[in-house]
Image (cartoon, rainbow, N blue to C red; front, top):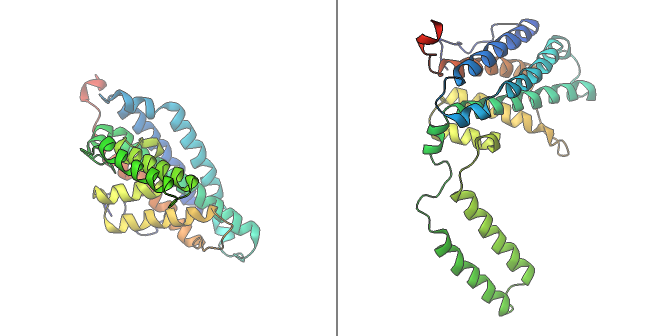
Amino acid sequence: MNECIWDGKMDCGWEELSRLLVKTCNKFTKVMLETTEFSPIEESKTLITSECMERFKSITGILANQIKEGAYYQYEDLTKEPQSAIKLNSWILLGSLTETTLQMFLAFYLDDYKNSKWQQWEDFKAKQVQEPIVECIQKLVEDGMLEAAHGRSLKNAIKDTIKEHTHEHKVQKIMFDELVQLFTELELFKEDELEYLKQIKSNRNGIHSFQSRDIGTWFDLRYSVRFFCYLLEWVMFHLPDIPDEVFY
């Protein structure tokens, strides 16, 4: 945890946290847009746009409104469906915002991301590898050792796997779980920061509600929202300064 930004302690109540969330988000979107304007990477500018930021602020505003109710709901019976659903919805919004924030950080430092070759097999001779495997599968089908449908599935699986690891992963399509893996590999976050990200990811997955699962307490939610405010500040802290000449 970067103590220049936050010491990791819960330092505000629900309503104050709601205001802090909106204030920090407004600052973040403004700084991100202004800084991206001076980026030499044109693709970054196409990813980090005013439309994107307005959508980000709108979702943050919805979460902030729900957070205001946290002071009341934290004392309610958590087995009651309305309270449980509201808490789950807050985790889902928080997870989406956190995922987007990490994607925007990568989008700004797009060249560095591309140079990392995330999950890409470098110097992999796809054609030379794929063809003999496909031929082997086809022979197994012809010899009656493998059903034709199963053979097709295996061929498609091989094709998809090779494609996945020989093509660049678009920043906007990297999922939360992969983002945590990537930031871990790049050593951009400390262990405690990664644990907060994992908690948000895990509780956000409560959206898959067919299977019973714990989604954290109201205090967990409150703390994670506070961490999200820290995350926005963390991203701004790691952005370059705008060139001085723009102020003249």
